[in-house]
Length: 325
Image (cartoon, rainbow, N blue to C red):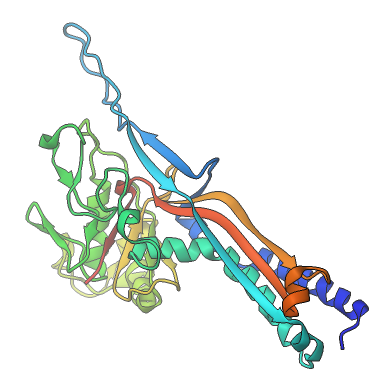
């Protein structure tokens, strides 16, 4: 039977292992999501669109009134509980229970990776209303309004799945490759604000699943490439210098992505990244292991209880796009 001294050693060892596991677990989402604090059960984000450039002053002043919009992101509670039978711990000859609790720490820290992945792929808890973005449409949509108050200014797309989308007679996006990457990049760079001026979108990240890693390395990082049937280099004879390599696109492999053919292009150079990880309560782990705790007395069980509150969300839809077959 485990003695009080041995149990104290167990507790101390577990605390050390949990802390080490949490601090050393790498995260994916900080590369493409901004972490923001929340002070209540939900957070309201507002924006007013881009202010037009100054006009030539040829008559009376023209007043510009702000047209505020809001985006509400509701915090979600989460929990995980690990239970260890006191008798089994007493009889443990192999130290197997030491391995469970560091996993609790690792999985706790990775929650943002999981939930933001689910948001991107409309899976898990992140379906339905969670898919709606700042303009009230699904975050990935082929008809985002350029101006919420003036439909005559047209729409833009950030969804090029299903083989791509023909815009002004040109196929944008499609299955991963030289053509889809470069047409999507050029399209995003050409997006315009309410005043008709380009928004200076600078795509710098391509997030891909494991299954596209080799192809992405060849398309984006190869020094030379065979001439594709695209643009002005169709007539190139032999290998050509690969200009895509100089465009500053980082290939970012997200091993958690479930989709095998969809890739995401993002501009992470702005003050706000394409996605939001909103934190109301940072995760905490509370053990119930005191000898007089009801669960220890009544069920001869120890528990380690984790909980917190957070929410994944979208930033501006012009900062990200997806494509694929």
